[in-house]
Length: 388
Image (cartoon, rainbow, N blue to C red; front, top):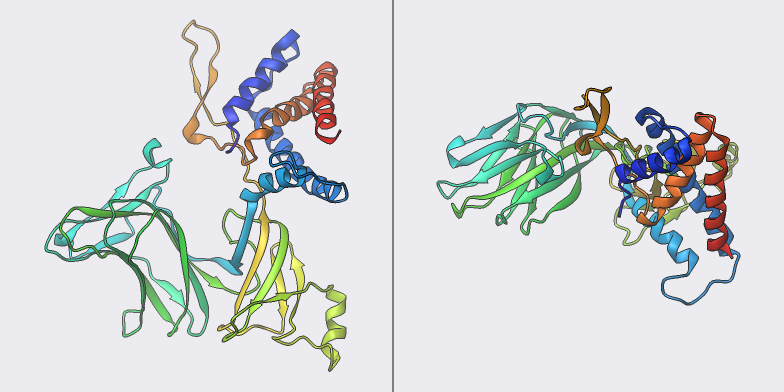
């Protein structure tokens, strides 16, 4: 469970104002909140190292390693392909003007505007309600794909009335139509990979396959097509790599994947010139090129599957607000706006550590040594309680 940012801010204000120790503005809070979140998150990895060297216990809810693993679990991304930036992407937040209906009489394609009912996630809704026929929405934007290259399609279903199925088409306008069929739809995020047959422009078709005329619908929250370049780590979206884990290589026709070891950049030359140590697809290696990419040796074929595990970076938080006039005639003041805010990604148990960490940082910013001292003392007491 995430930590509500408004709850944290109100507690920070209450404690900072106690004994007239100062006021933390929304701008200051947002800056300090992100720094506090990252400091707490980074400490998890040092604590894991510490408790790995200490004797554990068999209690169900008090083993510190288990607690830390629970806190990190939401940030773990497993079996992620190495993909580049999106060739096509639409989150349907503002409108669906780039999409058209195919055979309009079979149903309705409409835009679901962001609201509290859909967690402020806009969508493209495909309703089937006539002629016992499928209904399709087609993208007006073509996607340039290259023959022989591998691509991954990612999409999200955010609402539905249990249609019998749906299908995603990637069509080059000719004889090559790549289709992915889902016969038991569900809410969630999904993906599939394919290798392009032709170098040409392709369009995307989203199909409601129900033919019962019972007003069955399905709502897509987003869809994207990205190239699998076997170089870029992360997911080329909001999930950026904070800690890179295992890299796995599954050769075409192989029933299991091989773990790829990391080598230093200055070692790869020695490996490549050695007949015995030269990397092969059965014994590959990789080099970390940058914080967002790796290089595999040898170069994998498009038929091979390369995946990686990583810990993603927590997303930046933001206390959103609107400025409203004071009804009593005083100065304008900021009012919390939930639709424009981003909560902390950290575990719910980190609420008070976040409050005291932000207070400590705020005391430095507003030059209130007493606030720094009080917050630091509270953090030390909590730390001693955890580690005694």
